[in-house]
Image 1 (cartoon, rainbow, N blue to C red):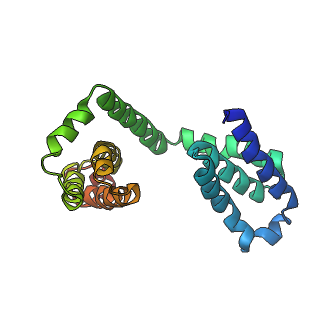
Image 2: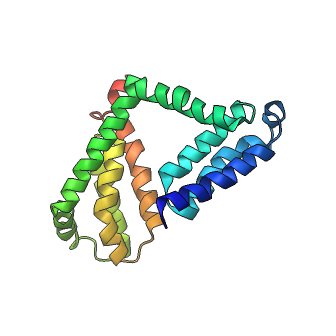
Length: 196
């Protein structure tokens, strides 16, 4: 499906919903306030495009705040929410760190590093239960940052868990349950400076 068709299929129904929406005062504290996250989650599941879905959810929420004015809602997303997020040094550092880390994981995957780790772990992960334990141990071993943990462990263990027919949901649960909690309690991590 072309990106333009996907964008049109997302934005046109969202615009129709916004036109049918009650005044802002009536939308606060009722089910209309649940609409932006529900739309974002639904679109992400249908189209498998997280960026477009999140933008549509934020746009819908900003339009709710702008008394249902679609154009003002769009410009508020750009000039208020996106600009503020991109000018805050803490948020920018997290964005840059995530991009660099994702790039390094991509380089590691393309160069065969992930395949080498998988080959080294295959003797230990012979059954579904042992593969889950190895995933958990990797999650504990990569303790310096929760984003790093999620990217590295998830991408490394995906081929192993797929081969052993462990669901992606279970892999995501194991990775997520070791990412932030381990980084939070580790003595040396990116969280320590924030917590101190």
